[in-house]
Image (cartoon, rainbow, N blue to C red; front, top):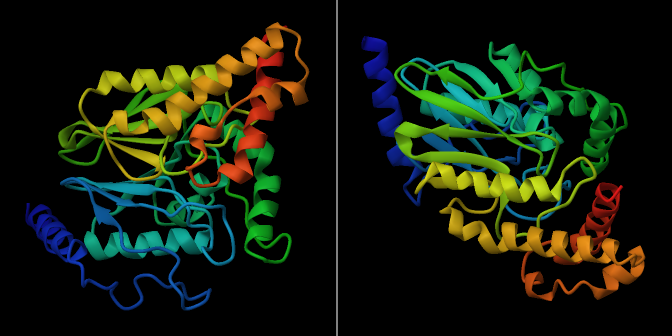
Length: 327
């Protein structure tokens, strides 16, 4: 009981500090002894009684941002903590741990990879060494294994590091095919398999006590989403619609500010529907790839960050997906 009271005191104290505009990270809380003195991460923001999140900037991974361009979070229970995505590199994950330790003395029991993108799981080993069980959807774990070397090379390239300098995480400890629940001590979190979307089998994490859903890369705002060869646009639209079942909750997206589901209609659902309906029509009519891309009008989404870099690639991938589904 004493430990529980101390944990509550820590959370209340540090949540007040984190929400103060003049707050600065504790000495050493945001630096890594094996890297430059510049912090990778800002302080996490408390978005509900038990949930803290890092809200990333837009753009691609580069040496300046050191790979921080996405959202991550952690949930604090009475006896333990669950981390939602583990970061792009081990130094980033170590910073996450330092911030978590400054907020609560409780151990990280679980680290949940919501998908297989490198910025969601390349910090796994840092949390595993601290005793956390790594959780992933089984299809995503297969993609992690198959693409591990390519992911590591991509990280090294973006950070201007020597090839082979990025360690590839080991297989996750717990593989789930459907839904699962985990107890953090007086607080349960529910992990839901949402199906294919940005990647083959995304997970979302529901924290009922706080009315919060961490939706990961099913939701984007502020920047243009990316269509990947291993994802599925039609299934992604269905995954978005399934989020309505959670009701009036606060959603934490993979990229962008937390908000209600309606805040993600334009940058996520409407964009996906445009790509899907246009390319399905083009393929059905026998229109070739380049002509189909030229006929696609994405201009109303041009205000989103990353539009010049991703719009053409998204159109091409959407066509190829529709063509594949036509057979």
